[in-house]
Image 1: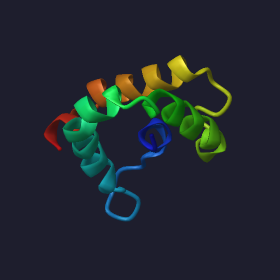
Image 2: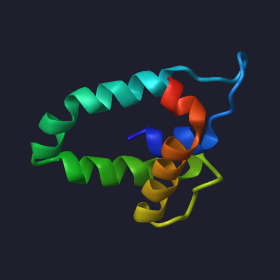
Image 3: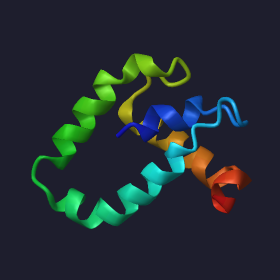
Image 4: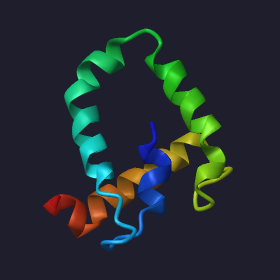
Length: 84
């Protein structure tokens, strides 16, 4: 789940904007029902987030729940995400 590190690291602006983040959000939304029911989903998410731990110094070393909470807080509080 690359969003857990990409969202805290996102720098807005043309040069550093990373517009693919919003596409990932839409993709996850469409796949969410299938993915959540898949027996390997939980393990894969945990392993991916653990492997990506050093990709964002803003959340590196934080517990899994804290990483998700931070990501969800950014998504719900930044007006730009609502527009996108």
